[in-house]
Image 1 (cartoon, one colour):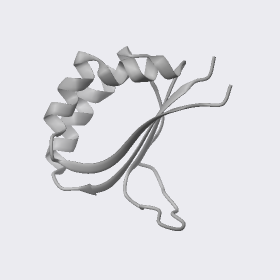
Image 2 (cartoon, one colour):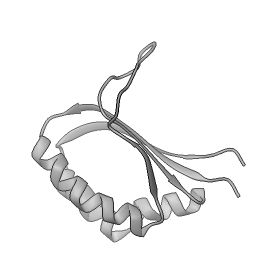
Image 3 (cartoon, rainbow, N blue to C red):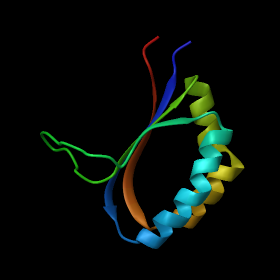
Image 4 (spheres, rainbow, N blue to C red):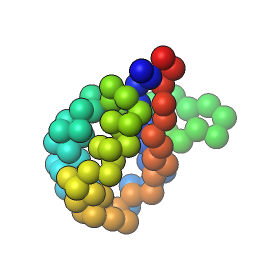
Length: 97
């Protein structure tokens, strides 16, 4: 079964305090959903139209698990705290089996 991944690239961070509050809630929600953080805001080299802001990659055992974690009540609470604190490109993608 192919794994699932959350891929999130932040275009702008308008409110670092909202982002910090989100991180405190999102981390346990991701772990509870079976997610494993592979990258979180480390060094980035961009090419073409790439964005050099924060980038996150989280792995789940399946695509379905990744979708369910995003829809969980715990993660929805984290999103409510984040609100308009950032602008990001968030995707759930299916890995190659």
